Image (cartoon, rainbow, N blue to C red; front, side, top):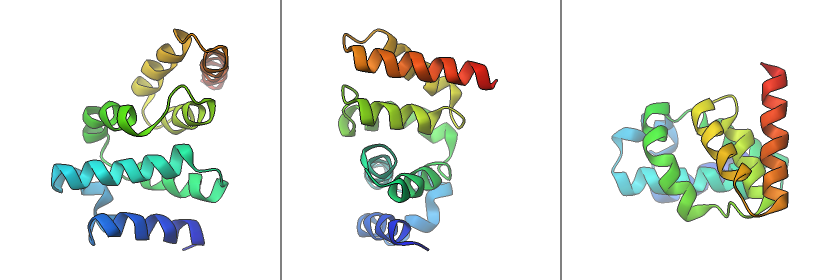
Amino acid sequence: MNIHENRLRRSVEAVSSDARQMLDRLDTLQPDVSLHVLQIILGFACTAQHAGSIRAGRTAFEKIPQKWLATHLQEVVGRSLDLADEWNYRRLLELLVNFMPDMFNMYVNVGLSSDSIEIFEVAKDLRARNRSEQ
């Protein structure tokens, strides 16, 4: 386990000592615990500046049950990420593109309707890149 994975582990375990081992069953934890863990993971995956932290967050995110994520992701994104920030927005789309394509498309549409030219360009770029890879 590298330094970034250790930081993520410590952050998640500060919320609940068994949460890290239960990412694949995050939906079985108390709602306040599971939502807080998701918020931490999104922070690593979308707001962190170091590639190692971003990878640690993405790896943890992909362990969470998709059905639970589909229900709760918008709520946690809304209160923990600044989607007007190009970095946060780009990292979120990169996180979702292969793992949750429906959510990816929804957030691309958010960017395409943004007043921010930077956010619009990120949405356009990642949508085009995703289409060319399919």
